[in-house]
Image (cartoon, rainbow, N blue to C red):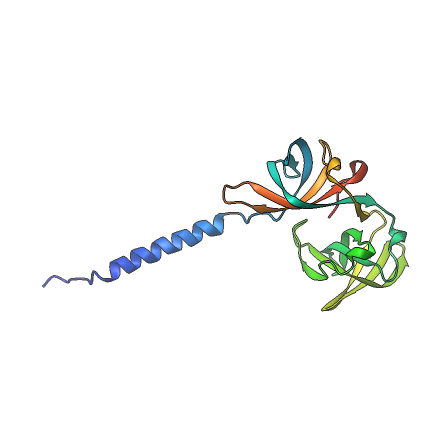
Length: 208
């Protein structure tokens, strides 16, 4: 006698295959960026054309309530005990946390984003916003012990590590050639909207 296979299972198998292929396609799509780092190419009303650091052309629509800050360079000696800082770190071969950059928050920004989390500046980088509890000078720069509400971290800051701080800024500084970091949200049509921009002063590239 011929063997009859159940046919009811076929729709479920097909549905499972469609679902699996959809999940696979979604996994292959790169995540939407939360930041755009680059140089302003042109300004047209509330739309910025930006060449990203990776070479992509991006258009950013500025919201009506957009906030701006300027970024200026300061020295390593400007980091004091009690300073509230943010620092991007990468693990060194010796297990130490090496600073890629340090930004010192002004007092009215104390507590901003306190804690430690993965960051998108470099592979395996981490962003930590915390208070400087101890600083030790050494031949290779300074070692900072920074503490936040859920822990602490010892960070090595080399002499050539960029150190910056925030200053007030306005939209007049958004001009061709300016280096920016824009915090963005991708809209349904694929364009990007920004409500917060950090702009480097005097040609400075914001290092964070």
